Image (tube, rainbow, N blue to C red):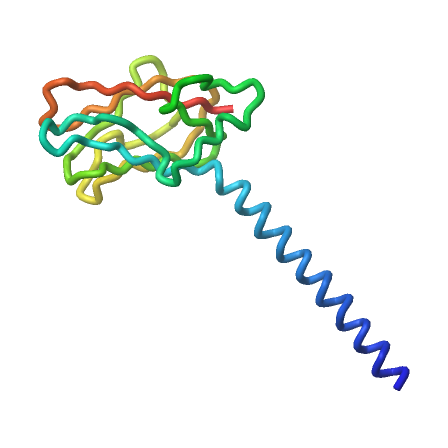
Length: 149
């Protein structure tokens, strides 16, 4: 009976340690992947112009930064080097991204392809304004912002 009790307690301890290890790795992984950004370019179906650029998950994490680099700019996103930013359009319109004063990316295809998205890996720190140009829009460009810490 004593041997069974020791085995039972050992089993509980090992199970608890495994649970904590798994929970920690999942929460750390989620924290790191939280810096990858999926952005949706909202496009007016009539004018074919961008009307906003929003995080796909509707979560703005720049507010967690101290001081907040985006202040009252709802279209400003924060990210880190070596993470990805993916832009997709809310319609089937083709679009391109232009960085007139420097870019956070080393190499990137700034034109949406048949998949309807642009995916780039961040390589440079800084505060970057960029332009979204939608094919068929007479009022291009639209100008949101990226802050990389």
